[in-house]
View 1 (cartoon, helix red, strand yellow):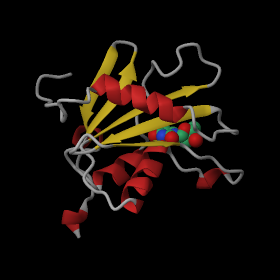
View 2 (cartoon, rainbow, N blue to C red; view 1 turned 90 degrees about the horizontal axis):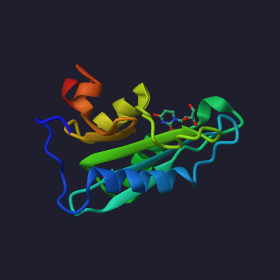
View 3 (cartoon, rainbow, N blue to C red; view 1 turned 90 degrees about the vertical axis):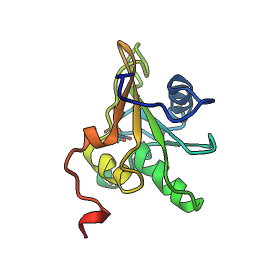
View 4 (tube, protein in one colour; view 1 turned 60 degrees about the vertical axis):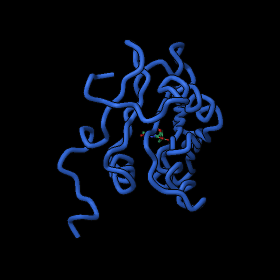
Length: 146
Ligand code: THU
């Protein structure tokens, strides 16, 4: 973790959150890409929402794991996710879920809507990596611009 990042929970570590995201990835519906993505959103009271990517025969309507997590969050009446862990891997890889799965641009924008200070946790070859969402989507369009 870079020194200027303050982790958001005393009970749930970044590695715990990644482990949850790996569990979520097992549920991915990915008959087309075979690329499983799992996400775990973490909230104030250490509540966690798990989500995965859901593909479709009409490829363009596939929903990413991060965005499906946000849909679940809003449907549950929840807001303000403090952090999200994201993992992804193709079914055929040996280093399953140990490599980075950076959220796509569309997901970064959707995450930004609900907490510009969110932390984004990813697995990487060098261990856990934590980024500020703001750094992953600099100078972004937000509610404040309307
Ligand atoms: N995918 C995600 O779920 N999240 C991302 O941030 C990147 C891509 C999914 C979409 C599709 O089901 C598969 O990964 C391959 O693109």
